[in-house]
Image 1 (spheres, one colour):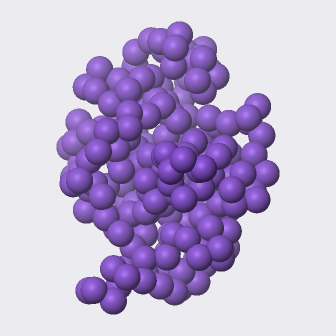
Image 2 (cartoon, helix red, strand yellow):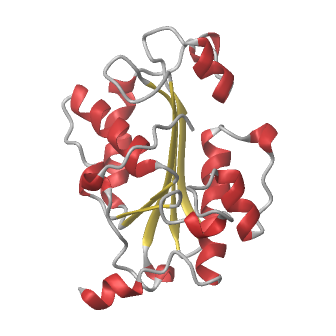
Length: 205
């Protein structure tokens, strides 16, 4: 994931759900041409919907960004401009992605509060759709996963997986589908370990 780690209070929300087995949870990741900004575009998206720990729906799509792929972005995710020839444009796939996000009760993402969510909302707005991500209840495994590092820093996905006992292959990293699969397994394992449980917020509500 290409990410800018800057605090974004407007995107920070906690899950009101204690019974994750009954919650419609979406795991999401995007790959892009660069950092959040009006000149950059999404080139790959993966959405998975889980009910409990069972994956019940998934959507994976590469997207023609209608611009060149910077070399530094390609080094991160390995997607070249050639790989995107013939892929649909964002305006063609955005309604499907937007509709799927509306169905989620809880969004789980890694650095999504500061990157994936705002980036998606920017791109939804660009094609005339509502910026829905900022309205969703979300759990950011980077922000909520600081327990997984020895010094309390925000963890890379690899570090979070290691702490949760989830296998992680760096050679497969930064493919959206792989990153979401590993993140969600770490999320489920972390909950079993007593983390990612927001019961205090539930009681306060």
